Length: 134
Image (cartoon, rainbow, N blue to C red):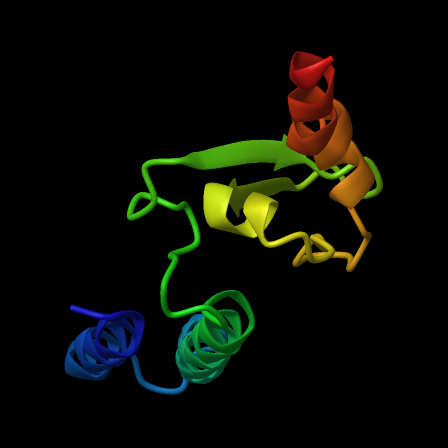
């Protein structure tokens, strides 16, 4: 039973009591009317919240699912790394393919370029290869 049904049930119980026109009956009926109005507004708020949740879910899908090859938490990528964005602190998942392609890596939350953080953590493979040749 949802909140609207409970409010209607209580109103029905009070109507069945046949309280008449006493001061107490007026107070009880007033409170029951208030409960009914509150239940209606709460129900509307729940519907509105569900609509916002759906819209937010759609927005998250469009923002975070830009790359069909990789999911948000990189479960599909065995060679994924977790990097904390130095600006906003969000965890960014970086696939090995993204590290190798040489393009800038941005935080999907704040847009901060975290390429330098990635380079510091994993080093530049080309420099290591040059050192090995010497």
